[in-house]
Length: 225
Image: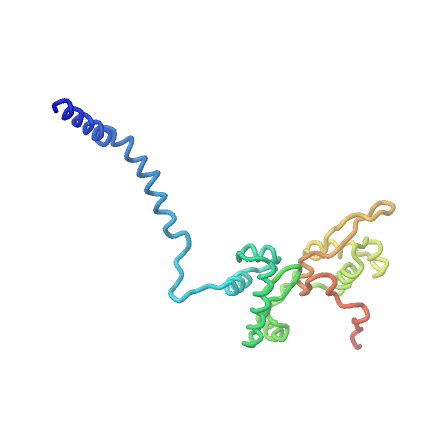
């Protein structure tokens, strides 16, 4: 019995010594490694307000509302956490709700993506709110040059000048500075001059989803004198 008691006593001492003598080495790392990670996952997502139940449609609406540029279908679907097919279905349902509620905006497909835009019928009032910046306005000459590039792209500078009848170098550089025109390649002719085309920003500003949405030439009418 004495040997058993000695053995029990030794075991108790061995179990207590790491807690007393090595307390600074063993227990503290265990608390840092085990206990702290258990507390971190407790609130990975901010707690929602009472009665707040987001749906896929409301998340799509929130993301589009916060975005200042068109979002492609794959990117928007990835942000929301759905697939492209379901995303398009939710967008259609949102637009149907907007129409039923007579809202002033719709989810429009523009520049290869989706964006929440106000209806054209409200432009009269919006123009009073938004002042066009001087550096953002285009002169008649700039609009003519931009129209030629938009309809004839890819096009070289010599062809632009042949159509307008004046030098176009400065005007092209101005349009490039504004982000409306870019170099898209080089022509396979003598000297290999640069080819110009429009940008994604051009589509966004003019409310076009693609170049195919440009008005047809026969649809354009000369304004009355």
